[in-house]
Image (tube, rainbow, N blue to C red; front, side, top):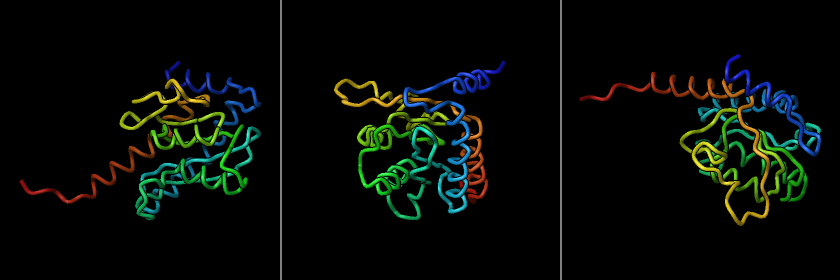
Length: 179
């Protein structure tokens, strides 16, 4: 069995105290991937995110929009958190789940902490900016008054593939630089 298959099997078996399951996370990651594909169509890095209730009701959706909004904070996770908070009429998203195609950066993960999100689910690890274990492990910092569970690796290969293909296409389309 491949390492990816082992991770998928382990995630499928997960169950949170609120009743959120790995199988539900897997299904909802497909929705987050749709958001990522929509971002790509707009010329953005293909990242997508959802905020959902423990039973899977989508409360907020987001996709990268940093270029189109000229806003460095318009990451998919931030957009989904803002959308869910507006919908609920409360900045606290206690008990809710953040699902992201990429491992959240420090800004996005700390926004999830501040919002009191219970579980952060991500697809592909992000070695350059990942704050949930790849580069940093911010939820293990002392002094935090809230620590979401971290579930990484949900549909990791699919989530990584869309980003890798995006950057390959982008590099292929650049004109050659003179020596």
